[in-house]
Length: 339
Image 1 (cartoon, rainbow, N blue to C red):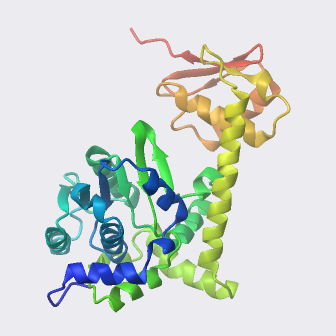
Image 2: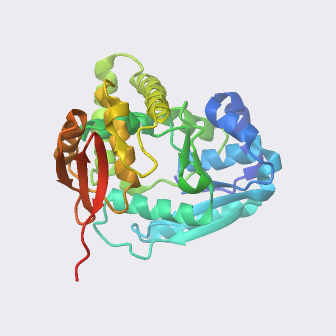
């Protein structure tokens, strides 16, 4: 809801911090923040919506010593005409009052009919170019929505453990989500109680995107059918799945299945559960240049079956080359260059 009156943002930030003390934020994020170097810059993804506005105000209020190096990142997808521009101006005004550096970006390739994955990738690329530490406003409703969406496409533990409170990324980058223990309605109630207005994205009310359909048509019915706090249940399942995923990662690391020459030593995986084999295979595929990124589930399953049997064979990994199994080793064979 757009602001209709002048807001005392400093007073409102203090009021919101009193309603949502540090103890309500995710403990893993709090622990990370305590370890963070004092001069390390923090960036907050700031769209102007309830979640991101609450996050910016809470980080600003709870970590006053970080304010001088705090940055707000606003990505304008340019998909909602005047509304998108109004969101950007609102965010700029809030940051000006708080004394937070405001960095804006525009989606130059914006077009009608753009998918949610395409828009998300553009936004994440903007974050990557401007910050190494990004705070994100995902909350408990997002956990349930993401879990239901990923169940629909058959995700494993790694996918179902998203969104993680502390997500480490390549290049030393980190994404932090301290609001995962709070429901959307709790955040909105705290904002209203503090006299804070936020921007509403009108597209969130439509059924255009999969997430919106899950949010409006599935989650409410699912919660009612459960006759319990289904959102809290999903959040707990996410935590447990993250623990399982970390245990699986540690197990594969201890086995050290990849040899010095880059081949996968199948003997070291012998007798291990299929989940360990699958994780080791995925790791191996990710290390091959340009190989296996778009393999189908069926192709990965076939390669996994042959690897577990140490069956001498060769599997195509697309234009990059082949996965070759020979003498209890899985190695990558690059495709011959075209003359």
